[in-house]
Image (cartoon, rainbow, N blue to C red):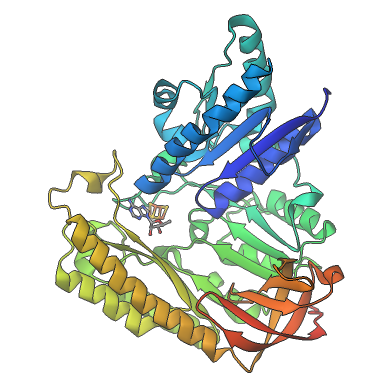
Length: 459
Ligand code: 5AD
Ligand code: SF4
Protein backbone atom coordinates (compact mmCIF):
# COMPACT_ATOMS: atom_id res chain seq x y z
CA UNK A 1 0.00 0.00 0.00
CA UNK A 2 1.75 3.16 1.21
CA UNK A 3 5.36 3.79 2.20
CA UNK A 4 6.79 2.15 5.30
CA UNK A 5 5.32 3.38 8.54
CA UNK A 6 6.79 3.01 11.99
CA UNK A 7 4.83 1.12 14.61
CA UNK A 8 5.60 0.98 18.32
CA UNK A 9 3.70 -1.45 20.55
CA UNK A 10 3.88 -1.73 24.31
CA UNK A 11 2.21 -4.68 25.99
CA UNK A 12 1.11 -4.71 29.62
CA UNK A 13 -0.08 -7.67 31.67
CA UNK A 14 -0.74 -11.23 30.70
CA UNK A 15 0.35 -13.61 27.96
CA UNK A 16 -3.03 -13.21 26.30
CA UNK A 17 -2.12 -9.57 25.74
CA UNK A 18 1.23 -10.63 24.27
CA UNK A 19 -0.60 -12.91 21.86
CA UNK A 20 -3.03 -10.11 20.97
CA UNK A 21 -0.17 -7.65 20.37
CA UNK A 22 1.51 -10.10 17.98
CA UNK A 23 -1.76 -10.51 16.09
CA UNK A 24 -2.12 -6.71 15.81
CA UNK A 25 1.43 -6.47 14.47
CA UNK A 26 0.62 -9.18 11.91
CA UNK A 27 -2.53 -7.31 10.89
CA UNK A 28 -0.63 -4.08 10.33
CA UNK A 29 2.27 -5.54 8.36
CA UNK A 30 0.39 -5.66 5.04
CA UNK A 31 -0.45 -1.97 5.54
CA UNK A 32 3.26 -1.14 5.54
CA UNK A 33 3.74 -0.83 9.32
CA UNK A 34 7.15 -1.94 10.51
CA UNK A 35 7.75 -2.65 14.18
CA UNK A 36 10.20 -0.41 16.00
CA UNK A 37 11.64 -0.88 19.53
CA UNK A 38 11.42 2.83 20.30
CA UNK A 39 8.53 5.29 20.20
CA UNK A 40 10.56 8.08 18.53
CA UNK A 41 9.07 9.21 15.26
CA UNK A 42 6.46 6.40 15.24
CA UNK A 43 3.45 6.82 12.95
CA UNK A 44 1.40 4.68 15.24
CA UNK A 45 1.71 3.73 18.89
CA UNK A 46 -0.42 1.00 20.41
CA UNK A 47 -0.53 0.54 24.17
CA UNK A 48 -2.10 -2.86 24.82
CA UNK A 49 -3.32 -2.41 28.35
CA UNK A 50 -4.12 -4.43 31.46
CA UNK A 51 -6.86 -3.68 33.96
CA UNK A 52 -6.34 -6.51 36.42
CA UNK A 53 -4.84 -4.38 39.22
CA UNK A 54 -4.79 -0.68 39.92
CA UNK A 55 -1.03 -0.48 39.46
CA UNK A 56 -1.19 -1.58 35.81
CA UNK A 57 -3.68 1.18 35.11
CA UNK A 58 -1.56 3.88 36.79
CA UNK A 59 1.38 2.78 34.69
CA UNK A 60 -0.65 3.30 31.55
CA UNK A 61 -1.54 6.89 32.39
CA UNK A 62 2.01 7.80 33.28
CA UNK A 63 3.23 6.18 30.04
CA UNK A 64 0.75 8.22 28.02
CA UNK A 65 2.21 11.33 29.66
CA UNK A 66 5.72 10.21 28.74
CA UNK A 67 4.74 9.61 25.11
CA UNK A 68 3.15 13.02 24.56
CA UNK A 69 6.45 14.79 23.78
CA UNK A 70 7.15 12.24 21.01
CA UNK A 71 3.78 13.08 19.54
CA UNK A 72 4.52 16.81 19.76
CA UNK A 73 7.94 16.33 18.13
CA UNK A 74 6.28 14.49 15.26
CA UNK A 75 3.64 17.22 14.94
CA UNK A 76 6.39 19.86 14.79
CA UNK A 77 7.55 18.12 11.58
CA UNK A 78 4.01 18.39 10.20
CA UNK A 79 3.38 14.66 10.70
CA UNK A 80 0.86 12.81 12.81
CA UNK A 81 1.45 10.11 15.40
CA UNK A 82 -1.67 8.05 16.12
CA UNK A 83 -1.83 7.05 19.76
CA UNK A 84 -4.07 4.03 20.27
CA UNK A 85 -5.10 2.44 23.56
CA UNK A 86 -6.07 -1.21 23.21
CA UNK A 87 -6.82 -4.01 25.66
CA UNK A 88 -8.68 -4.25 28.93
CA UNK A 89 -8.36 -0.67 30.23
CA UNK A 90 -9.71 0.49 26.88
CA UNK A 91 -12.60 -1.92 27.25
CA UNK A 92 -13.37 -0.87 30.81
CA UNK A 93 -12.88 2.88 30.55
CA UNK A 94 -13.80 3.65 26.95
CA UNK A 95 -14.26 7.37 26.34
CA UNK A 96 -13.05 8.22 29.83
CA UNK A 97 -9.50 7.70 28.51
CA UNK A 98 -9.78 10.35 25.80
CA UNK A 99 -11.47 12.70 28.26
CA UNK A 100 -8.59 12.29 30.67
CA UNK A 101 -5.88 12.23 27.98
CA UNK A 102 -6.99 14.14 24.87
CA UNK A 103 -3.78 13.19 23.07
CA UNK A 104 -5.21 9.67 22.72
CA UNK A 105 -6.70 9.10 19.25
CA UNK A 106 -8.07 5.58 19.30
CA UNK A 107 -9.57 3.41 22.03
CA UNK A 108 -10.53 -0.18 21.31
CA UNK A 109 -11.09 -3.30 23.38
CA UNK A 110 -9.76 -6.86 23.04
CA UNK A 111 -12.77 -7.91 20.97
CA UNK A 112 -12.32 -5.27 18.25
CA UNK A 113 -8.68 -5.35 17.23
CA UNK A 114 -9.31 -7.55 14.17
CA UNK A 115 -10.95 -4.42 12.73
CA UNK A 116 -7.70 -2.46 13.10
CA UNK A 117 -7.10 -1.78 9.37
CA UNK A 118 -10.63 -0.44 9.06
CA UNK A 119 -10.28 1.62 12.25
CA UNK A 120 -7.00 3.14 11.02
CA UNK A 121 -8.61 4.11 7.72
CA UNK A 122 -11.41 5.71 9.71
CA UNK A 123 -8.86 7.53 11.89
CA UNK A 124 -7.10 9.01 8.85
CA UNK A 125 -10.44 10.05 7.33
CA UNK A 126 -11.36 11.83 10.52
CA UNK A 127 -7.88 13.39 10.72
CA UNK A 128 -8.32 14.81 7.20
CA UNK A 129 -11.82 16.09 7.99
CA UNK A 130 -11.36 17.56 11.49
CA UNK A 131 -7.64 17.51 12.22
CA UNK A 132 -8.07 14.83 14.87
CA UNK A 133 -8.59 11.09 14.50
CA UNK A 134 -11.19 9.83 16.92
CA UNK A 135 -12.07 6.17 17.01
CA UNK A 136 -13.80 4.33 19.81
CA UNK A 137 -14.68 0.66 19.57
CA UNK A 138 -15.37 -1.31 22.71
CA UNK A 139 -17.86 -3.77 21.25
CA UNK A 140 -18.38 -7.30 22.45
CA UNK A 141 -18.70 -10.26 21.59
CA UNK A 142 -15.72 -12.41 20.65
CA UNK A 143 -17.22 -14.71 18.00
CA UNK A 144 -15.89 -13.38 14.75
CA UNK A 145 -12.52 -12.04 15.87
CA UNK A 146 -10.49 -15.23 15.51
CA UNK A 147 -11.97 -16.03 12.08
CA UNK A 148 -10.86 -12.66 10.78
CA UNK A 149 -7.31 -12.64 12.08
CA UNK A 150 -4.45 -13.57 9.77
CA UNK A 151 -2.28 -16.60 10.58
CA UNK A 152 0.74 -15.74 12.73
CA UNK A 153 3.71 -14.56 10.68
CA UNK A 154 7.28 -15.85 10.85
CA UNK A 155 9.45 -13.30 12.60
CA UNK A 156 7.56 -13.25 15.88
CA UNK A 157 8.91 -16.43 17.39
CA UNK A 158 11.99 -18.30 18.39
CA UNK A 159 10.90 -21.88 18.84
CA UNK A 160 8.09 -21.10 21.29
CA UNK A 161 4.70 -19.56 20.54
CA UNK A 162 1.42 -18.74 22.21
CA UNK A 163 -1.85 -19.94 20.76
CA UNK A 164 -5.03 -18.40 22.07
CA UNK A 165 -7.75 -21.08 22.38
CA UNK A 166 -10.23 -19.57 24.78
CA UNK A 167 -11.13 -16.15 26.01
CA UNK A 168 -13.24 -14.62 28.73
CA UNK A 169 -14.49 -16.10 31.95
CA UNK A 170 -17.78 -17.09 33.56
CA UNK A 171 -16.41 -17.69 37.03
CA UNK A 172 -16.94 -14.21 38.47
CA UNK A 173 -14.43 -14.31 41.30
CA UNK A 174 -15.51 -11.33 43.36
CA UNK A 175 -12.17 -9.48 43.02
CA UNK A 176 -11.70 -9.87 39.27
CA UNK A 177 -12.48 -7.65 36.28
CA UNK A 178 -11.86 -10.28 33.62
CA UNK A 179 -15.50 -11.35 33.13
CA UNK A 180 -16.30 -7.68 32.51
CA UNK A 181 -13.36 -6.76 30.26
CA UNK A 182 -12.85 -9.98 28.30
CA UNK A 183 -16.51 -11.02 28.36
CA UNK A 184 -18.14 -14.38 28.91
CA UNK A 185 -16.30 -17.51 28.09
CA UNK A 186 -15.71 -18.35 24.45
CA UNK A 187 -13.82 -21.41 23.15
CA UNK A 188 -12.45 -21.53 19.61
CA UNK A 189 -13.42 -24.50 17.44
CA UNK A 190 -10.96 -27.43 17.43
CA UNK A 191 -10.27 -27.27 13.68
CA UNK A 192 -9.18 -23.63 13.83
CA UNK A 193 -6.84 -24.36 16.75
CA UNK A 194 -5.27 -27.39 15.06
CA UNK A 195 -4.81 -25.40 11.85
CA UNK A 196 -3.03 -22.60 13.70
CA UNK A 197 -0.86 -25.09 15.63
CA UNK A 198 0.19 -26.84 12.40
CA UNK A 199 0.95 -23.48 10.84
CA UNK A 200 3.18 -22.61 13.81
CA UNK A 201 5.10 -25.86 13.30
CA UNK A 202 5.83 -24.86 9.70
CA UNK A 203 7.40 -21.68 11.10
CA UNK A 204 9.79 -23.72 13.23
CA UNK A 205 7.83 -23.59 16.46
CA UNK A 206 8.52 -26.53 18.77
CA UNK A 207 6.76 -25.39 21.92
CA UNK A 208 3.16 -24.22 22.01
CA UNK A 209 1.48 -22.63 25.02
CA UNK A 210 -2.30 -22.80 24.76
CA UNK A 211 -3.72 -19.63 26.23
CA UNK A 212 -6.95 -18.51 27.80
CA UNK A 213 -8.24 -16.89 30.99
CA UNK A 214 -9.72 -20.22 31.93
CA UNK A 215 -8.45 -22.94 29.62
CA UNK A 216 -9.60 -25.79 31.84
CA UNK A 217 -13.17 -24.66 31.10
CA UNK A 218 -12.46 -25.02 27.38
CA UNK A 219 -15.39 -26.54 25.46
CA UNK A 220 -14.68 -25.86 21.78
CA UNK A 221 -16.70 -27.60 19.09
CA UNK A 222 -14.85 -30.55 17.57
CA UNK A 223 -15.00 -31.80 13.98
CA UNK A 224 -17.58 -34.32 15.24
CA UNK A 225 -19.92 -31.47 16.19
CA UNK A 226 -19.51 -32.22 19.91
CA UNK A 227 -17.92 -30.08 22.62
CA UNK A 228 -14.36 -31.15 23.37
CA UNK A 229 -12.76 -30.74 26.78
CA UNK A 230 -9.31 -29.25 27.39
CA UNK A 231 -7.95 -32.76 27.99
CA UNK A 232 -9.26 -33.97 24.65
CA UNK A 233 -7.79 -30.94 22.88
CA UNK A 234 -4.39 -31.69 24.44
CA UNK A 235 -4.46 -35.21 23.01
CA UNK A 236 -5.22 -33.78 19.56
CA UNK A 237 -2.40 -31.21 19.81
CA UNK A 238 -0.02 -33.95 20.95
CA UNK A 239 -0.59 -35.78 17.69
CA UNK A 240 0.73 -32.92 15.57
CA UNK A 241 4.14 -33.84 14.24
CA UNK A 242 6.84 -31.38 15.21
CA UNK A 243 5.36 -30.13 18.47
CA UNK A 244 7.81 -31.20 21.12
CA UNK A 245 6.53 -29.26 24.10
CA UNK A 246 3.00 -28.38 25.12
CA UNK A 247 1.93 -25.99 27.88
CA UNK A 248 -1.35 -24.39 28.81
CA UNK A 249 -2.45 -21.60 31.11
CA UNK A 250 -4.46 -20.48 33.11
CA UNK A 251 -6.44 -23.16 34.89
CA UNK A 252 -9.16 -23.17 37.53
CA UNK A 253 -9.43 -25.91 40.19
CA UNK A 254 -13.18 -26.21 39.66
CA UNK A 255 -12.71 -27.35 36.04
CA UNK A 256 -10.30 -30.23 36.56
CA UNK A 257 -11.59 -33.25 34.62
CA UNK A 258 -10.64 -36.86 33.91
CA UNK A 259 -9.41 -36.28 30.36
CA UNK A 260 -7.09 -33.58 31.67
CA UNK A 261 -5.55 -35.91 34.26
CA UNK A 262 -5.27 -38.54 31.49
CA UNK A 263 -3.40 -36.02 29.33
CA UNK A 264 -0.88 -35.48 32.12
CA UNK A 265 -0.49 -39.25 32.45
CA UNK A 266 -0.21 -40.11 28.76
CA UNK A 267 1.36 -37.20 26.89
CA UNK A 268 5.12 -37.23 27.46
CA UNK A 269 5.69 -33.81 25.94
CA UNK A 270 3.05 -32.10 28.07
CA UNK A 271 5.44 -30.15 30.29
CA UNK A 272 5.51 -31.18 33.97
CA UNK A 273 4.56 -27.70 35.14
CA UNK A 274 1.10 -26.72 36.24
CA UNK A 275 -0.02 -23.16 36.95
CA UNK A 276 -3.11 -23.60 39.11
CA UNK A 277 -4.13 -20.42 40.93
CA UNK A 278 -5.69 -20.86 44.36
CA UNK A 279 -5.59 -17.20 45.53
CA UNK A 280 -5.90 -17.99 49.26
CA UNK A 281 -5.64 -20.89 51.69
CA UNK A 282 -8.59 -20.02 53.94
CA UNK A 283 -11.98 -21.51 53.12
CA UNK A 284 -13.79 -18.43 54.43
CA UNK A 285 -11.81 -16.21 52.06
CA UNK A 286 -12.16 -18.63 49.15
CA UNK A 287 -15.91 -18.50 49.72
CA UNK A 288 -15.94 -14.70 49.86
CA UNK A 289 -13.90 -14.73 46.65
CA UNK A 290 -16.53 -16.99 45.02
CA UNK A 291 -13.83 -19.46 44.06
CA UNK A 292 -16.20 -22.45 44.26
CA UNK A 293 -13.63 -24.77 45.87
CA UNK A 294 -12.00 -25.30 49.26
CA UNK A 295 -8.33 -25.45 50.18
CA UNK A 296 -8.65 -29.21 50.67
CA UNK A 297 -10.22 -29.64 47.21
CA UNK A 298 -7.07 -27.99 45.90
CA UNK A 299 -4.77 -30.21 47.98
CA UNK A 300 -6.54 -33.29 46.60
CA UNK A 301 -6.12 -32.05 43.02
CA UNK A 302 -2.39 -31.55 43.54
CA UNK A 303 -2.07 -35.02 45.15
CA UNK A 304 -3.79 -36.57 42.17
CA UNK A 305 -1.61 -34.71 39.69
CA UNK A 306 1.50 -35.82 41.56
CA UNK A 307 0.35 -39.44 41.55
CA UNK A 308 -0.10 -39.25 37.81
CA UNK A 309 2.98 -37.20 36.90
CA UNK A 310 5.39 -37.45 39.84
CA UNK A 311 7.84 -34.83 38.54
CA UNK A 312 5.14 -32.16 38.14
CA UNK A 313 6.02 -28.68 39.46
CA UNK A 314 3.22 -26.52 40.82
CA UNK A 315 2.79 -22.78 40.34
CA UNK A 316 -0.01 -20.52 41.54
CA UNK A 317 -1.42 -17.03 42.04
CA UNK A 318 -2.10 -15.58 45.48
CA UNK A 319 -3.90 -12.49 46.68
CA UNK A 320 -3.17 -11.17 50.17
CA UNK A 321 -5.38 -8.71 52.00
CA UNK A 322 -8.66 -9.64 50.38
CA UNK A 323 -11.41 -7.76 52.29
CA UNK A 324 -12.03 -9.42 55.65
CA UNK A 325 -8.80 -11.45 55.64
CA UNK A 326 -7.75 -12.08 59.26
CA UNK A 327 -4.33 -13.09 60.61
CA UNK A 328 -5.62 -16.66 60.84
CA UNK A 329 -6.88 -16.58 57.23
CA UNK A 330 -3.45 -15.41 56.13
CA UNK A 331 -1.79 -18.12 58.23
CA UNK A 332 -3.95 -20.65 56.35
CA UNK A 333 -2.49 -19.35 53.08
CA UNK A 334 1.04 -19.78 54.41
CA UNK A 335 0.18 -23.31 55.56
CA UNK A 336 -1.18 -24.19 52.15
CA UNK A 337 2.02 -22.94 50.52
CA UNK A 338 4.10 -25.03 52.96
CA UNK A 339 1.94 -28.08 52.23
CA UNK A 340 2.07 -27.82 48.46
CA UNK A 341 5.62 -26.58 47.84
CA UNK A 342 5.74 -24.42 44.74
CA UNK A 343 8.37 -24.23 42.02
CA UNK A 344 7.32 -20.61 41.59
CA UNK A 345 4.25 -18.45 42.15
CA UNK A 346 2.85 -14.96 41.68
CA UNK A 347 1.49 -13.02 44.62
CA UNK A 348 -0.32 -9.70 44.76
CA UNK A 349 -1.86 -7.31 47.22
CA UNK A 350 -5.61 -7.17 46.81
CA UNK A 351 -6.45 -4.20 44.62
CA UNK A 352 -9.95 -2.73 44.61
CA UNK A 353 -11.46 -2.95 41.13
CA UNK A 354 -14.47 -0.68 40.68
CA UNK A 355 -17.54 -2.59 39.55
CA UNK A 356 -16.53 -5.89 41.13
CA UNK A 357 -18.46 -7.26 44.15
CA UNK A 358 -15.43 -7.29 46.49
CA UNK A 359 -15.03 -3.53 46.03
CA UNK A 360 -18.25 -3.13 47.99
CA UNK A 361 -17.21 -5.21 51.00
CA UNK A 362 -17.00 -2.92 53.97
CA UNK A 363 -13.99 -4.28 55.78
CA UNK A 364 -11.01 -3.55 53.55
CA UNK A 365 -7.62 -4.59 54.90
CA UNK A 366 -5.29 -1.75 55.73
CA UNK A 367 -2.44 -1.12 53.29
CA UNK A 368 0.37 -1.69 55.85
CA UNK A 369 -1.03 -5.08 56.76
CA UNK A 370 -1.27 -5.99 53.09
CA UNK A 371 2.37 -4.93 52.63
CA UNK A 372 3.64 -6.99 55.50
CA UNK A 373 1.60 -10.07 54.52
CA UNK A 374 2.85 -9.84 50.96
CA UNK A 375 6.43 -9.66 52.18
CA UNK A 376 6.03 -12.72 54.40
CA UNK A 377 4.34 -14.74 51.66
CA UNK A 378 6.88 -13.72 49.04
CA UNK A 379 9.76 -14.67 51.34
CA UNK A 380 8.31 -18.16 51.75
CA UNK A 381 7.72 -18.51 47.99
CA UNK A 382 11.25 -17.26 47.33
CA UNK A 383 12.71 -19.93 49.61
CA UNK A 384 10.71 -22.63 47.86
CA UNK A 385 11.68 -21.42 44.41
CA UNK A 386 15.37 -21.26 45.30
CA UNK A 387 15.26 -24.70 46.93
CA UNK A 388 13.62 -26.13 43.81
CA UNK A 389 16.17 -24.53 41.52
CA UNK A 390 19.07 -25.77 43.66
CA UNK A 391 17.59 -29.27 43.57
CA UNK A 392 18.12 -29.26 39.79
CA UNK A 393 21.89 -28.79 40.06
CA UNK A 394 23.80 -31.87 38.91
CA UNK A 395 20.89 -33.06 36.80
CA UNK A 396 20.33 -32.87 33.03
CA UNK A 397 17.43 -30.80 31.73
CA UNK A 398 16.02 -30.17 28.28
CA UNK A 399 16.18 -26.52 27.29
CA UNK A 400 14.52 -24.71 24.40
CA UNK A 401 17.00 -22.04 23.30
CA UNK A 402 15.04 -18.81 22.88
CA UNK A 403 17.38 -15.83 22.75
CA UNK A 404 20.89 -14.50 22.93
CA UNK A 405 22.42 -13.88 26.33
CA UNK A 406 24.27 -10.82 27.49
CA UNK A 407 27.74 -12.29 26.90
CA UNK A 408 29.04 -13.25 23.46
CA UNK A 409 28.41 -16.93 22.75
CA UNK A 410 25.79 -17.18 25.47
CA UNK A 411 22.21 -18.26 24.82
CA UNK A 412 19.22 -18.26 27.15
CA UNK A 413 16.55 -20.92 27.06
CA UNK A 414 13.71 -22.36 29.07
CA UNK A 415 13.59 -25.54 31.08
CA UNK A 416 10.44 -27.68 31.31
CA UNK A 417 9.66 -25.73 34.50
CA UNK A 418 9.95 -22.37 32.74
CA UNK A 419 13.17 -21.45 34.51
CA UNK A 420 15.59 -19.39 32.40
CA UNK A 421 18.71 -21.40 31.68
CA UNK A 422 21.96 -19.67 30.67
CA UNK A 423 24.57 -21.59 28.70
CA UNK A 424 27.20 -21.25 26.00
CA UNK A 425 25.93 -22.55 22.68
CA UNK A 426 26.28 -21.69 18.99
CA UNK A 427 23.84 -19.14 17.65
CA UNK A 428 22.52 -21.58 15.02
CA UNK A 429 20.90 -23.60 17.80
CA UNK A 430 18.42 -20.83 18.61
CA UNK A 431 14.94 -22.32 18.47
CA UNK A 432 16.27 -25.84 19.14
CA UNK A 433 15.87 -28.07 22.17
CA UNK A 434 19.14 -29.23 23.73
CA UNK A 435 20.10 -31.13 26.87
CA UNK A 436 21.95 -29.15 29.49
CA UNK A 437 23.78 -30.33 32.59
CA UNK A 438 22.73 -27.88 35.29
CA UNK A 439 25.69 -26.55 37.28
CA UNK A 440 24.37 -23.50 39.11
CA UNK A 441 21.11 -22.02 40.39
CA UNK A 442 19.73 -18.75 41.68
CA UNK A 443 16.14 -17.90 42.56
CA UNK A 444 15.29 -16.91 39.00
CA UNK A 445 17.62 -18.85 36.75
CA UNK A 446 19.85 -21.82 36.14
CA UNK A 447 23.20 -22.11 34.40
CA UNK A 448 24.79 -25.13 32.81
CA UNK A 449 26.69 -26.84 29.99
CA UNK A 450 25.18 -28.23 26.86
CA UNK A 451 25.38 -32.01 26.57
CA UNK A 452 23.79 -33.02 23.29
CA UNK A 453 21.16 -31.82 20.96
CA UNK A 454 17.93 -33.44 21.96
CA UNK A 455 15.46 -34.85 19.49
CA UNK A 456 12.20 -35.84 21.05
CA UNK A 457 10.25 -38.14 18.79
CA UNK A 458 6.68 -38.90 19.49
CA UNK A 459 4.53 -41.69 18.31
N1 5AD B 1 -6.32 -7.62 43.13
C1 5AD B 1 -5.17 -8.34 43.19
N2 5AD B 1 -4.89 -9.37 42.40
C2 5AD B 1 -5.79 -9.70 41.46
N3 5AD B 1 -5.81 -10.67 40.54
C3 5AD B 1 -6.93 -10.57 39.83
N4 5AD B 1 -7.69 -9.56 40.30
C4 5AD B 1 -7.01 -9.00 41.32
C5 5AD B 1 -7.27 -7.93 42.21
N5 5AD B 1 -8.39 -7.22 42.15
C6 5AD B 1 -4.74 -11.66 40.40
C7 5AD B 1 -5.25 -13.07 40.68
C8 5AD B 1 -5.29 -13.69 39.31
C9 5AD B 1 -4.13 -12.97 38.63
C10 5AD B 1 -4.14 -13.03 37.16
O1 5AD B 1 -4.24 -11.64 39.08
O2 5AD B 1 -4.32 -13.72 41.51
O3 5AD B 1 -5.13 -15.09 39.33
FE1 SF4 C 1 -10.81 -13.73 37.11
FE2 SF4 C 1 -11.65 -15.77 38.63
FE3 SF4 C 1 -12.13 -15.77 35.98
FE4 SF4 C 1 -9.61 -16.13 36.90
S1 SF4 C 1 -11.37 -17.51 37.27
S2 SF4 C 1 -10.27 -14.77 35.19
S3 SF4 C 1 -9.58 -14.81 38.69
S4 SF4 C 1 -12.96 -14.34 37.46
